[in-house]
Image (cartoon, rainbow, N blue to C red):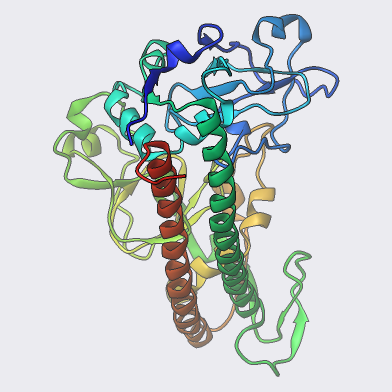
Length: 416
């Protein structure tokens, strides 16, 4: 069946418009909500935990109506779409483009489904302007041509997809709940073992640290600085090819520190970088890294399974292995990540420092127990990780099924 197509510019009630370029600093509930890319998810939900507002005097030209489509125009989320259906006053920020559709031609929810299709994804790939960041301008969005059946047919497509996708989402929800339960189990096992050990009958004592509580009677509590050497690195000047081009020295930053074991480096630096920046040095296999700042990374931990240099946002902990095994420390720091983050300083962006990390208390079993704990956790966590990985694959397959189903219906390959 052939379906007529339409360009977005020909489906609009009014021209596409860019949002308001104002900082999101106010949270006055009496003012219009200020919607940014980070405020909505892939399921068209508006988040409450990111609420920001804007002075009504500034928002009038950027007010939203029910049915308005917001399109992200730059960055990693370029092309992300949101259909505004809220009964609140709201306006939109500068990295968004508003599309107000002529609903005699295209229904907002139908177009939202179009933006979740393979057809749309492939158009985005062809259209992205690859410069410093990905970008799709209003001019490019205007030229997006998509299948446009009659309004009656659009209503049937919406009804069909609402039903079918709800069934798929239910399966995804069940799998996600199971996945989250296994991750909680993993965390619980780690927390228990690194604070109480493997012997359920061991005598306990007060550790003297409120957030740790009781520990086995024969364990010690020491400061990190008593057990390890602590350091950091730096970032050679960006844009200087002499520091990066054909680099041969592995270089890690906080994007590598993801509560994981690091087996390879995504980036490398040159001999020139090592010569010009004396603070850059190799840290050995077994070094523990903690991300000292960054909204999505602070407190994250990694165990280096390679020797590498690091940037200034990573704190390197080289433990004295006669006292403290890296694998045990890795598990211990992951266990207490929330508390470690709470020790940071700063306002809107919390930071850790080498000095704070040096003062961290470490609950210290004897070396044979540390080794037994690390071995036990390797085995237990590997089994859980395998289960979680399989669940992730199933969730991903359902996600692919959703995209394929939407695409088949939108393009007329599947009759509705």
